[in-house]
Length: 124
Image (cartoon, rainbow, N blue to C red):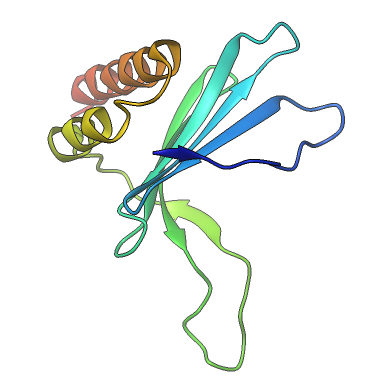
């Protein structure tokens, strides 16, 4: 994955870093002390894009509706409910794709994905 440079930073919001390849988009949020506080991992971005997000202590998993179904309208992409997250596919691809990223980022995302997967199993 490659880091995008000059990522727009919202005033009075978390600091963001954005990484991308042909399968993933990874956004990492940091607090003012440069501690990771959340992430959004979008995956299968060229086919059936979904996102797992950890923000403000909560997880979500969503499909990304690109808003392109009509040739007459091009709406902003939005997140819509998509409950199932297949970590057996996403996690190995993520590990392979992030070999050049900082250890702290990779470990944080892996740990949170594993936490999400474990919590999901409790509710099946």
